[in-house]
Amino acid sequence: AQSVTQLGSHVSVSEGALVLLRCNYSSSVPPYLFWYVQYPNQGLQLLLKYTSAATLVKGINGFEAEFKKSETSFHLTKPSAHMSDAAEYFCAVAAVEYGNKLVFGAGTILRVKS
Amino acid sequence: NAGVTQTPKFRVLKTGQSMTLLCAQDMNHEYMYWYRQDPGMGLRLIHYSVGEGTTAKGEVPDGYNVSRLKKQNFLLGLESAAPSQTSVYFCASSAGNGNSPLHFGNGTRLTVT
Image (cartoon, rainbow over all chains, first blue to last red; front, side, top):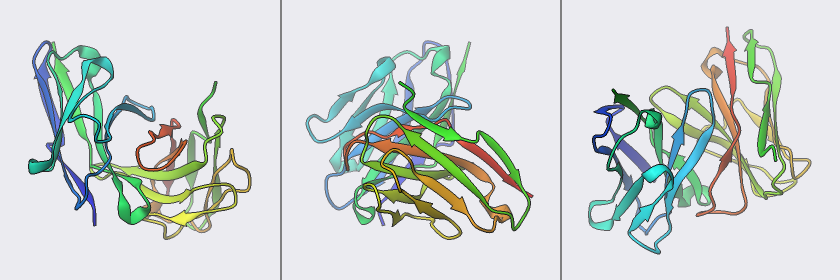
């Protein structure tokens, strides 16, 4: 079964520091990959998506992610964290077994310290 | 433009009671989904629909039923609620399959005692 693994349920960074949230997927074919963000008491919002056009994908709010097929990874980064980035982040893959419906990772809560 | 609207926002049920969660989207999307979110488990797909009058099972369909009588509405039913169904439920819609992004509602927090 296709799956997504997010390493680290909680990540804490200082304001201005690099943000790195890790995501690994299992798929036998090049997948569609996504990062979503969830702010408290809200639904998920799309940050960015990979659809094979380019390996480095830029998203909203200064985030970007790099698709590395050899490592089956799609890590999310941001050069400089802002307090407003504190949220929960989810990596997701379109799962062939469910007709390309999204399967989500367990999520990573990002805390930004002042 | 409201996007995806879920009602109710909160609900408390006793074991064995039934209820229906309502989801409405105004984006003319073909695809609609119901997910549940539990701590440390991310979002898991309960049921989905690829168009009016069609539904299909996702990862965790047991104990739930759905209906898509109108394109803009997707209903999730619990016939006999159990404490294991305590969760936050999210509805989402998308224009297409695979690489089309999902648009989410703000969730329904359900507690079953």
